Amino acid sequence: YIMTDQQCAEAFSAAGCPDVRTPAMDRIARAGVRFTEAYCSNPLCVPARTSMMTGLLPQQNGVTYNNLKLPVKASTMMGRVLADAGYETAYFGKWHVPVLPKEKERHGFATMAHTAANGVDAQVPDASIEFLRRTHSKPFLLVSSFVNPHDICEWARGTAGKDGPMVEPPPPDRCPALPANFASPEQEPEVIRRVQALDNSAYPTRAWQPDKWRQYRHAYYRLIERVDSHIGRILDTLEETGLARSTVIVFASDHGDGNAAHHWNQKQVLYEETARVPFLVAFPGHTKGGTIDRRHLVSSCIDLIPTFCDYAGVPTPDGLPGLSLRPLAEGRKPRQWRQELVTQTEFCTFNKSYGVHGRLLRMGDWKYVVYSEGSNREQLFDVVKDRGEMNNLAGQGSHRRQLAACRERLAAVCRKYTDDFPLVS
Image 1 (cartoon, rainbow, N blue to C red):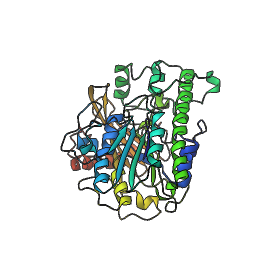
Image 2 (tube, rainbow, N blue to C red):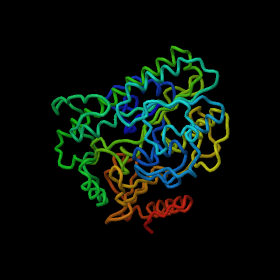
Image 3 (cartoon, rainbow, N blue to C red):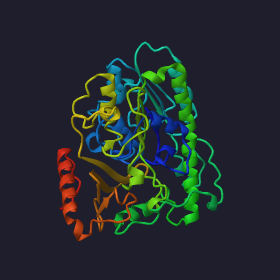
Image 4 (tube, helix red, strand yellow):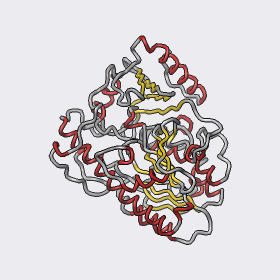
């Protein structure tokens, strides 16, 4: 499992982005399936990563924003499941999960290194390569977790990069163009800008002019290229050792980044750029290379453990809500698939919640977003016709029926997971 931090769904060249070159990520895409409709459970580091490692939604495991503890009862963890199935387990790179690396009996990764949140990316490929070159008497689960492009947060603040020096941006006219959805959308919930104004450390961008945003996008793509070069070394080693033929590769990011869409940097908000992530599955001889799945709704967090268990030939632990992607990745029809997917957010500083929550529901071509307070709480988008989310249909009478259907479905999901989010009736 190869993971980046804060990478948008389409921020690599195989996804059609003209402003970045990512030959390593593209190699994985050419060998497997790219799921375009993959959403994180929460667009923030700790909740997303905890959801990945436990296979539970944030409202189930209790970790809904950074710096919360993981309750002991949420004990099923990715490394533990695979270790108990007879796998050798290793994790290299950014951890950022509220379980200490030394608690190996709990998380299940027998080998861990370079788990700090910063300054580790150059060490991750070396550790991963050394692990891959060992003689393995058992099958293995290797997680290679990178910090970047998360350093875009530091670039926005004007501070030094935490995982390597920043690239000095060229003049704005030589930087990527502004996104088509640079403007704020119609009838945007007012709570979004209110929260943005509360934290100048996270969002120092409110007064930026277009030229600054273009340089931001240039820096963001350079950070993605930097991490791509690290990933390429791991892929090369898989080929050199002959392991590529028998190894499933999954690539994803924990969440996205605003990347100047709607004048937004960082994450937490529920727009596509922050909530939707790249998700690739490749297994030579089993996945049809270059396939793009635009139909199925995928959770980049809770679907990981079921997928790994399916490939390992062991049962998925009881009580996990995710689904195995193996049938879809191998071009087979799954027995069942979800009709809707929910992402949640809880706006916060580094260690304090603002008490403002949001829920995102994807159902078919529709995306419904609702926040817990403020005026104009709801957004409704047709993400096929309006992927940039510029036309909020929630207040239009012609879409009253679709809005009611989304409200009803979100209410059912909240009941299922005992989620007390304040719905709109």
